[in-house]
Amino acid sequence: TKGGNFSLPSARGCWVLLHFTAVWRRESALESAHLGDLADRFRSRGLVVAVMDIKEPIILWRAYARAHLAPSVTALYDETGAVASRYAPPGVMPYSLDRSEAVLGGSAIIDPKGRIRILVLPDSGHLDPTFQDLARALDVLLPGGTTSTVAVTASAAPARTLGADDGTVRVNQ
Image (cartoon, rainbow, N blue to C red; front, top):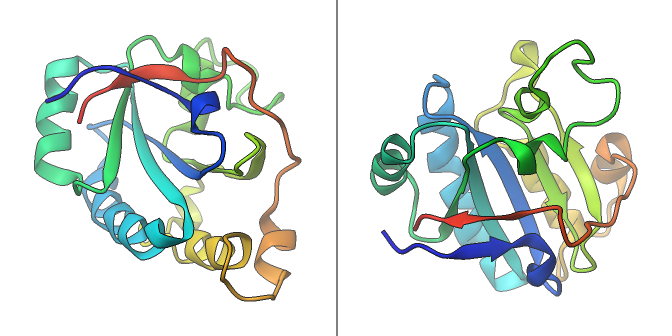
């Protein structure tokens, strides 16, 4: 695999769908296939899809990424969970010693200015590994899409601009 760094603030000018995962999650393989579909579907409209593994041995993540992620998806590795923990909203899992766990299975849609427009946290009772709700939101948010705002206003998290320390991680693709 190619190594290097991917800085979310350096992706300004592009829309980014950032999904947080771990190899041990049973939903990961199914989600990975659908994330590749989203990357292919929305690439021409300016979307970059990245999947960030949190706190696993890099050898496991590299093997998983090679086997399950489409070439159109950027594989990221957060060795310590420090980057992922910055996406955990205040008050979510307040008693957990590991804030990065709060976003496992979640996704963030980040606009070209670096603002988090939508943050979806995992809900095992309503898990949709096909990301249909995110696809509808992307269709509204990205240039050239529909004009309906229903999906976005129903799901939108407060906008937050990413700072310089909000996401430099290793690229493993």
